Image (cartoon, each protein chain N blue to C red):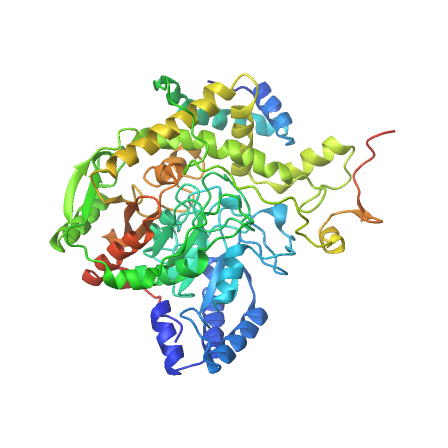
Length: 485
Length: 95
């Protein structure tokens, strides 16, 4: 019953095939059966059933929208009033927020039913979901592999058909890379499109929330609910939210100018099976009438180094709030205030989080600020300018989402720099504040490959239209891992 | 840039993180690799390039300076590890 797209579930609820309460019960039981994946940190069955009951009543009153009564999951980075929000950190293991994130409010206002909070890399710092205090998430396609990260629990939950949609956040690829590695669709909107209020901050000039689901159509339905002006996030943009779903139907691939950055097809360590799958996807777009142009993004290889200065610098500042005084973990028997700070933070944070805090502290410290932080901000502008120049001649940019398919749990865990390079194609998009999505575009060694489409600022409707057009012509997005669904 | 165990100690102190002696070698190794990796930025010619802090280069909105929150002290303090009479408690700072 539950294992369908949001659009299909919505139609079934509207027809009265089943109620939201029945659908939510089926979803909760699927989540229990799928516990081995470790996709959820917290489930909220009582709350979910109450929300489902309210959704059924709203429908009976004729007040249903497309998301009314649809079970969804939130990444455990979004604060939920009265529901533990851990950010997958020991630091926040017992933290129960007294308020909801804007995204959580928006999804509830649209009638969606929250069934739980998904696993993730600790404070969203990771590309494999292995840095979680609650243990790694398994990829439903191959349980010895990672689902990607940091939104790995949301990705695994959608890929396994436990929920039709989940929220994620993307600071350097954390929606798109796990979407690619688990064969689902995921969208990072333009910086500022979705409010960051109540989303636990990692790198504030890069963080952006977005939807993860099984089709571009479902992404459109979710984004329309998530987006919207919120004065509580000073970087949230006050422009009207388009009707994304309607624009899918109006969109035509014919004449769309698609740029292929040559640097994205010649990257070091690129899996040739991934390149082939992406080239086949581009061919499908060409056959549908798109014009394909080769372009250049010359500063591509500088994006990861820039990111690993800017993101840790912002993180070191954002995470200074976790001091063991007002909330979060506190060490036992502190000798003095400095000991309280240092041991509470040392015990509360995992290794990768500590590494990034120290790198960021170093990059911002007296004598190094100009050489690291200021320099990275200058190169960030050069990367942004590369995209601006490309968008003078093409409408969207296409390429691989990640250089490889899902890798084995533990394969990169001891080598931070190798792990960082798995985001080589996604990071530049965050630096430039652009929207981008990943859709399934084939299998390599029985593991999913993602096609990334990058748009100009606020071109989400165009990206979703192109992805929907691709999904009308292919069935990769309907393929499921063996034993699921 | 190579980082040694003393550098790690200094970075950890600035970041208010307790790092045991046995962990410092590991951190020194990983932090050296990360800094060597970002070091390639120093070879880029950025003369005349303005640093970019905001991806859309917007200025931040201002709002009227008005009270927007209600008093929820009890709810917030319920989250704290240690409070007394409406105050957050920390070890004695002034003898």
